Image (cartoon, rainbow, N blue to C red; front, side, top):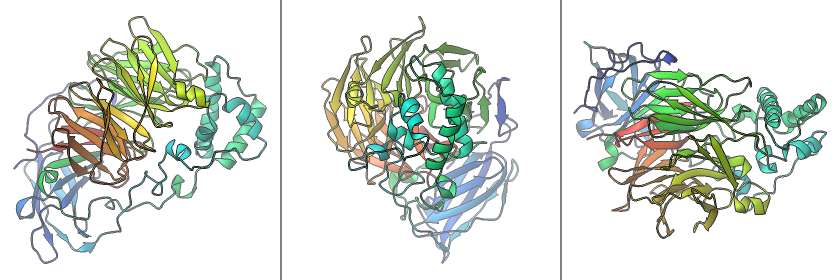
Length: 562
């Protein structure tokens, strides 16, 4: 049976962008590749993983072998592929190159005859198990109170950095010398937009650079705490069965793997959009042709354009934030390709950035400013910005780290306060914030979605669990996925079928959860350490779930098969 139902489709290509990938949008993506997975005795293997790679196009596909060990994939771009099988404790070597062309369907059998590398324990990418990654490492119970090392630059950090950032965020900002140069340049740019921050002098800049580059540099091994793992180290050590056999995983490696595509959203045509935190560009991947297009936002005078939160709102508008010194929110009409820019007023820190934006049914746009303990609202009609500080953060004298956002059926804006184990509920008109304790210790809530009933579903990253919030009663209910410590980072809900999807960042899986049966199904991704922090269901095709891999520079989706 064909993996995808073939449908001819013509797309208009917009001229404002630079394209990477296929030379034509529909002419060369009808390739077919089939084969059989066998064990070392020649017997067929059912439920094995099969990877199909096209290095020239930076594409990896993964399917599961079916009855008689057969696998099949169609709608491939024409070109050269290699194939590998993985099942249980063994795997095959990569096959020699297989040509896939219009008149020449490809065929490649694989034999599972090689012992696999050891399994990789659940963990934040590049880190040891239990570290938590990101902000979590600094706020876990028992973590040592962060302090600045002695040195000539310590007083400068205390006087001019900690007015906008707490000690933990400063210490956690590991970078090489080139990046520290850029960070300090940006800091001086942010100071120009601050209502109270004081700029560095040139002499202070030199002392500060020497101090931070000496004390907060990247670790060895490209900044990793662990060796680079085998790419198959997170694939399960058993054969797949039942519903978990019926999917395909698709992965695209971006041209710049250091671009940090933290966020992903889906437009009305089913295209996946990402923001580059480092590259400062928008990227769009077409799910049928694998055409990848880069779009430049309107230019600014500042050196750094740091795109972050992104959301596909009504009327074909793609909303996103430029968290660089230019301090702007933008929308892009995905049909006309016209940008609209909203410049923020001066703020305490000189910047407003975050990785979660959402549109409200009343037409306003919301975003959490993680580092500055603030929830922001924009009214596009009046271009008016409003903001409110999180009460617990004010009380503690540090950011409560407002992270994800979801809007419930009553119009309240829920924010995940991931540094204080709480949820905040914001009144959409007054901005008043009520706070609720999460009934799981060290939960570290990250990102959330809403279902068709208006209830909220939250990824509890630290606890590795999924939490439901009944928006009428504010009752919290917690569910545990089959894999422990899976790092449930984000949740997105299929509104048509009432299925909740979660990103399991620690174990490189995406899972579905059926609230009616309270059953999970887990679908492994193709490689270890994908770092998929965000995912989103395509509501027009809810069998397809998109993800973006921040540290790995990869994006993709899984698609359920009939």
